[in-house]
Image 1: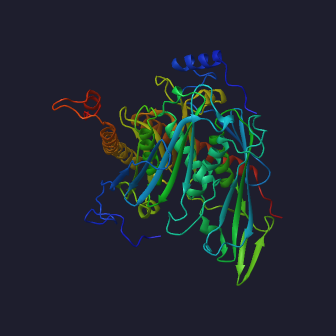
Image 2 (image 1 turned 90 degrees about the vertical axis):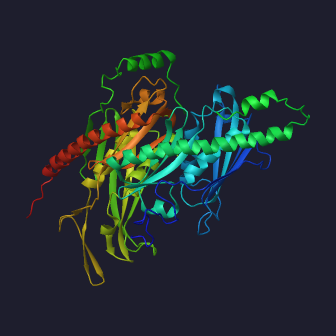
Length: 263
Length: 282
């Protein structure tokens, strides 16, 4: 089906006005939600996802406790109003379960579960608005929520989608682009540069794959900077709110200055 | 009932051997078990085995009325439930995680990547289309059931012949195979799935087509489905030990080679089988 809207026009602009390698606007809101230990509302352009983390806490599902590490439990809900047409997805829909287990598998190597044997870390993800890059948004939101909850991670996990429109690579796709163009999602751990998730479900030639794969991986590093800045900002706010005692002129709070150095 | 985890001596032996580039069954790291294909008397019935892993795939066709939103397309349904026949660790009725993975991968490889041309399955638009039912039975699990299932499914689709139909005005005449030779399915391409397992110790290179023990001891798998024209259909690496981008590209390069070999093999076997099916015209 030919698209009425051009994916990439001759001037190098996409349907939403971005250039080829431009990522969408990221909005990260780390304010407290409910009684969650860590929570975030993350937006990539129009795709909006909220994630709440509880844990590590006592395992509710005794049958799934592991004797030497924490059990990661992920539940994903797609709000019925998240897509253009109102659609209620059942909890046991195979697609949703597969989605959740993909995210769980992505975070297994990143969370230091060995520190909390026989306990459980619950991650609840709510997809509020879908406009492409939902898996990417869920993974990024989960990373931020886990960091906000203070759960020890080996590294951030940053995910980006990418696609190829007749030899031109595109980054961070919207729904319109995802429906038209072969695309993949990559989640990278920036410190080591290793990939923890790579999914592609559409046909793409091997030669094109290499280029877009490298691009998406480096885009993950760019996202990492944004996410790290957001976390540091939030921590600074919290620390400022917690420091009650007035300081003498020139005296620096040693803990504050050590940790808040941007490195 | 979950089987007991591999014992510590087993684990240490396999890992040590892999560090030296040796696999328990004597294969090289990137060597696949030789697949064997047995075709049944019915067209579209294939028994595929990779070493001791055996999977049976069967294709059947029936005519149905298409849904109003897609009046021009046929339908393909894939049924792949793992019964305890494959191994005692699978329970009837309760899908294990591996079963969900295999079902989703088969769905992505065969349905989402448009293996069969659905429009060619249309007989009368809006009224009658072919509904293909692909059933995959897992007979024995000796590691890497996914690759075996995918191979069996693709070969079954290639092997299957649907009855020829003639549309005269509003009437549809279905010719039985005895009257007119049945027609093969119109397939866009034939993807093959290749699974690589890798281990916690990153000095061990990824191994292709893991056996049951290797799969259980692995720290992650990456599955790549691609066709002989070097088009990647599905790449799935979820979790497990994080891999560097160069390693992933190397694995993709290896897969392109292997898929060409598999394609050649499948073609030869299908031709051999077709020669044995002679039709006598009386």
